[in-house]
Amino acid sequence: MPLTTKDDVVGYLPNTLVVLVSTVAIVVLGDIGRSPRMMYHAQSFAENGFLTYIVGYGGSKPIPSLERQNKVQIRHLPEPPKSLGSLLPFIIYGPIKVLLQVLSILHVLLVQVVHPPEFILVQNPPTIPTLAVVWFVEKITGSKVIIDWHNLGYSILAMKLGNSHPFVKVATWFEAKFGRTAYAHLFVTTAMRDYLVQKWGLRGRQLVLHDRPPHRFHRSSPQEIHDLFVRLKPSLTLQSSLRGFLPESSAPYSTPFTHTASEHHPAVASTSPVSGSEARRNSIEYRAKIGTSSVPPVSATSPLYKELQLPTRRPDRPALVVSSTSWTPDEDFEILLEAMQMYEIRAGELASLHGKAGNARKEQNEVGALPKLLVIITGKGPLREKYMKEVAELQEKWKWVRCVSLWLEAEDYPILLGSADLGVSLHSSSSALDLPMKVVDMFGCGLPVCALNFACLHELVKDGLNGRTFESSSQLAQQFEDLLTDFPKTPRLDDLRASLSLSSRRHSAPPNVHTPRQPASPRSEEWKWGTWEENWNLTVKPLILSDFDH
Image (cartoon, rainbow, N blue to C red; front, side, top):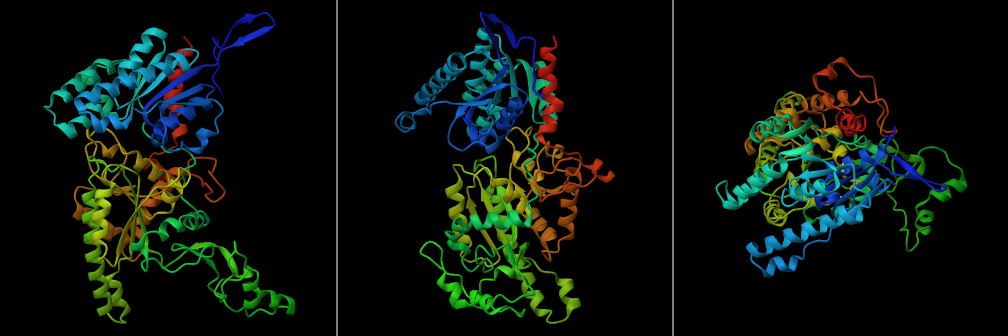
């Protein structure tokens, strides 16, 4: 139910009722479309009756549900001129960039946002200059600042420059000075809350808001998987490394992961009796004649309409592994690269042993086998070109593994996660206090994850229950083998997926007709989960409601 307050109606003018809607400004000093948590915040505020301004840079498209919200207004900040960065040394360009950012944020918050917002929600990091700017605006307008702590800004800078660098010391002081006092603080982990409260003595309300996916994230149905890979066919076709690696397919009837033709009815001929006119319509010659310049003729091997079924997963498909990365130093892609090399060697060894076992079924079962592995990497970032060049050179000699990098639209990303067999997270955390949003997305899509371990990861990934944790490439390669042996029959992987499925069944309304919900099992108490909407309503909504009650 939308929030209403006694201050919404501020008075009467002659023959006019003047109404002020509750407002919030959400400040993201980054690409709005690549800031999922802040977009989810914006949607939640809007759904609760707030006129919501989201302030940040353009670039990627926001999530479709945000674009449909009539209470959300996006205010794009002008990008600092990149040409200056190449012409001037950082010590000069840096302050100029910060000054331009300060002026642009102030212009939006003090000029473009007509009425001072009740709340200003600011993402941290980046820390400089946003925390100081919103602190200044708070003094002028009386808005209440809520800091959403995703990580520690100075820790990210320390990864590049070292802890003892003067810039890192200044950044640490800045973050403590302007981050200490706020109306409220939101944290992505309990560990981060405890650390900052002890280290800096934070003032204001302190609430842990764990990341959760929105309700539209779900396990993909075979139909959704089929439609996705029909759409992705042009992108996959451009990947030269995939030629001859994936099973043969003929869109729209089949993809490398799904097929629609009946296994019990040959594609070329039908044994059921048909009339003469129907036989003529079904003949190869007639079907070839109906092709046009825009619609190619139907081939002789294409199934007849009467032989089509709903898509199902192909038993000969490769295992699909997905990893989302920002291609930055805090995600060690070398670990995945080495694990893929080890898997390539091990899959070849097992295939050789399997062949030597001959026709003896018992011996074959004892040996086991590994499937081909397609690893899809999503995301953009500075190290992408470097690592994908290494991958291209290595997989020229690989038989069992392929790795490709794709950029997907916002609506296709959750479908890909819901289509995959296993997810991989390489996030190591500069502060060891935040959690990878990518794992949250994967869990929301019912996708078990192998995640690089660090201090507070246990708040999200329960090793052996909803995923696996690793600390080296050899451990990751072994987990691939343990979970994917005898694919697509994977009992260990199925157990991990069942834990995520049980927790998701608590929700009463299914996201779509392909994923019906069932009553929860008592076992779901072992692994508590929920949607972003549920978590936000339990944590943030009482915070903003309590302000209106006083």
